[in-house]
Length: 289
Image (cartoon, rainbow, N blue to C red; front, side, top):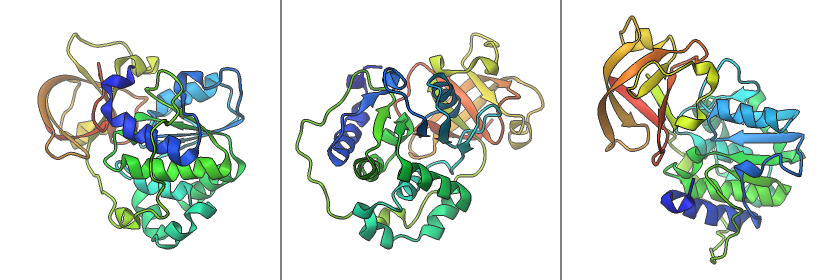
């Protein structure tokens, strides 16, 4: 995908590059040449992350993403919209972030992000040991994307972690001057979002795993978990009018008919909605049928 058509990614990349002091590499280069035993994927569609880690023969991989998919291993599912809080948990032991971390209510962040203490400990183990950090578009499309980039860049610099980025066509090196802040705004993490109900994750059509099954009709399709039957009060798959609202931007509302197809491989309360492009935070709330 051409980054020129993705204005949100530029500020994220500039900040990430400035704080890390590293060249940000495109996701397609992961596993090419250099190999990594340890890698952590964050904000990247879970089935796609699993495929990438397996292809690169990563033996110690962690996937951080809300999507619940039965074939995904070592996935730690956080609450939709809490990427800023999860980023802070990656930086808990970094000396350069010590003053910032001291101001945080760690218990609140862990609770609201829906991660358990054991998962946080495993994340910290990855940060201590280093490896590769694989970042997805959920992060640069987040409303706090620059804040997230500041934290992740600081972690990568201190722990010498290599960074790979989705939707990047070639290596990126920050060429513009960015002021490196001595402290980060901890107030951003005082109130993390709560998201309940049914959601869909918007991904590119090319990112749909084969296990989701063949397309059922010419209409745009929503791949749904069985839980949608009770949540949305429907008994069978078929064409339904669906009202969608972004999990981040309450101004974005879409009303459209979709082919709802139930997929046994999808668990939880998040379906999958493939589209030709993704220009907003990928999680959308299903308001009504």
